[in-house]
Each structure stands twice: as C-alpha cells, then as structure tokens.
Length: 282
Length: 229
Image (cartoon, rainbow over all chains, first blue to last red; front, side, top):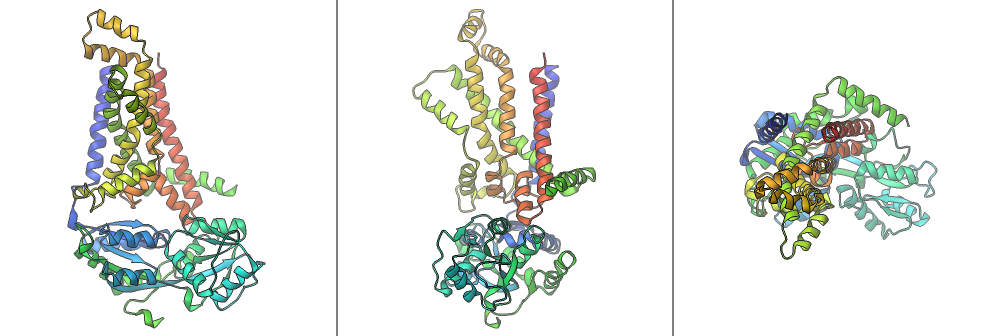
C-alpha cells in the first residue's frame, strides 16, 4: 500500500514537472515579444482579439503585461519589454525625448467622460468644458474619486486639475488605487464624480448608475500610441519583435479589426483607429 | 444578491460545458501550485528535520526566521523574484519571467517555510526519549529519522495542505511574476481579479467557487489519508 502511494507520488511529480516544462519551452528569446500596456486595452478585451492575430501572422509568441501606463513605460524604459501601447501622450513624449522609446505612432483613440450622480451638487450636467466642470466640483466640495495610480486616466486627470488651477485635496477628493472598474464601483457607492474611459464605463453600465456629465471635449480624447523600446535600455530587448508588433498595430487589416471591435457587444465601437495621424490633428 | 445567484449558475454552466478557457486556467493553477508544493516539500521536510534534531549556535535565530517565513507576504516574494528574473536582473539570462516556471519559483519560496515550520514542530513533538530508545535499540541515524517521521506523519500531511492551500490561493506573486497572460500564466486567482476588473462579476464568482471546490477536494483526499486508521 505504502509502495503504491509512493509510486503515485513519483508519477505525479514527473507528470507535473513534464507538464510545466512542456508549457514553457526553452527560452525562445527572439521569438517572444513582451508588450507592456495599460489595463484598459486588456479589460476591454481588445488585446484578446489582436494578440492571437499577430501571433498567427508573424509566428511570434506574445506576453502582454497589463499594468498602469506609468508602470508600462517604466518597465519599457528598463528594457523589460519590447514594445509599449500606452495612452498618456505627455508622459510618452517625455520618454521619447529622453531616448528611452523610439518611433511613437498613434494607433487609436476612445474618449473619457466625466461622470457623476444625476442630481450631483456641482450641477455640471451637460457642460461642454471639462476644466470648468472640475472647477465647479472643487468649489462645491463635491466628492470626486481619483485613480491615484499613475495610470493614463490618472495622468490625464491630474493635468486637467492643473489646467483648472485646483489642487484637489481630501476630504472631497478620494484617491482609490485599484483599476478603473473598481474605481467606478467606489464612485458609484459614494455617489461621487469620477473620470472614466468609455470602454470600461460601457462594460460596467449594468452596475453603475452614474450618468455622463461632460463628454466630447477635445481634452477628453484618449489617444493610444505604440512605441518601440530602445535596445540600449537593457539586455535582451527584442527590437525586431517590438517593431513587428508596432507595425502590426498600424496595418490596415488590424485597424479594421479595431474599428469593428465592441460593436456586437455594445452596439457601438469602443475605439477609433487613427493610423497615420499626428498629435497636431486633434 | 442576484449577482451571487448569477455567479453560481455561471459556475455550473462553465463546468457543465467544460469551457476550454476555464479548464486551462484550472489546469495551470493545479500544475503550478502542485509543482511548487512538491518542491517546497523536497526542500522543507529535510530542513525541518535537521532543524528539529540538531543543536547549533544561532539555531533560535534560524528557527525564528523560518517562523517569520511562514507568514511571508506573497507580494514581497513576488517583488523580489520579479527583480531577480528581470532581463536586467542577475537571473535575467534564464528568460523565465512571465512564464509558469517563474510562478512555480515564487510559490515554492512562499510554501517552503510553511512546510519547514510545520515539519519542525511535528518532529519536535515526537518525545526525545522515543528517539533515544530507537538509538539504544540499535537504529542507525537515517533509520531513526525515518521512524520519527512516520510517527509525525499526521502533522506532516497538514504541512502539505497548508503549503498547497497557501500557494493556490495566493495572488500577489502570481500576478507580478506571471503577468496574468492569457493561455500562459493566467491562474484561478489572477483570472478572478481580471474578471472583476472587467465587471464580469458572475465569471469571477464562478472561478472562486471552482477554487474553493478544488482546494476542498484536495484537502478532503489528504484528510482521508490522514485520519485513516
């Protein structure tokens, strides 16, 4: 009996070891592309559609690391990724200027909305200008939930506060920390204002009863760019793979997929493809 | 409440139609945490036995370190393993960051002190006089250790359960060193965080039910062995 148990144990050990090593074949270096990107591209499900396409077309195997834009760029600057898909133009340009990232190209945009409770104290429903609306929120001392995590959404929010000339502070200003979805939950719970990208808001529409307050302002455009990592950032950067992924994101077929993405589920596209456009065009 | 009901229904549906993605995630979790637990046992049992049966200077210090390690926060392990495995890190040449192997490494580091600590306590609980008696009866040292371990086998099974239960349900390290990559390093816990982030609460609940059933099943089997008389 005991012998049988030991045999079973041994067989299990071997089987497990086999399975794990089979799943992670010997480091295939140049065949693997590490894409550091933002949570919104993953949470929206877009990458789940695009990555298999890219792998099919090129034979590369992709590892997507979905983190906040701040971390996505920081990882790339250390050479821990090969290509970055981010949505914080100001920060991106800084990295490009420092030479950490190369060849920044616009891929697509969606937009942010300032949302809040229907009968909110700041009375900003339907305002055209987000900066003016934020000023009213601050003046009213109305609750506002911030991502507080250096994500693209947070970076944009901070720059908007700066433009508004307001230094947001507790008690009305709440810094949350987790992702967009969780932040929407907190804002909903506290009946507070917050800034959300449209894709995540649509995904949460069933559980969040906050309403759009300000949308369509040029400042609320959420522009995604792809950047290749400077191989000098660290050892083992897969330059060719990173470029291949960046080129793939801008290819007409990929842009068509982006344009159609989300229509079946939400009745409207989540992203607008803009390959070839420049920042000045917006 | 309707969310919970939806979740339970969703769990049943996902299991009933053997959803390939869910089964893949389940299998990854089992493989990774199973392998990590085995490694932890291979390292932790001998270490626990040695610590229990020998006396050396600074032993109290080492035992305290092991006891601290039993509560090692997974994010701390995740952070340090990530930095070690970075391309620019000392072990970067292995290129195993963001693979199941990296999660195995991190989880083994988390589970090893748990196994060591429980082994240590189990072996120390076998009366010293019993050991003396064995030696007096002519047992060699390996024979003595073997008999003592057999005496301590009930708490030793608890070590397996605690180690496995600890790693299969941890999230911080899996997320950091694995990267939650679809089809590669997505485990039950990281998938749960992702689905919650997406607003798919029913899927997240379904996954958590799966996790609980899995851990319960394994503990049940081990407890059955432990309590068999």
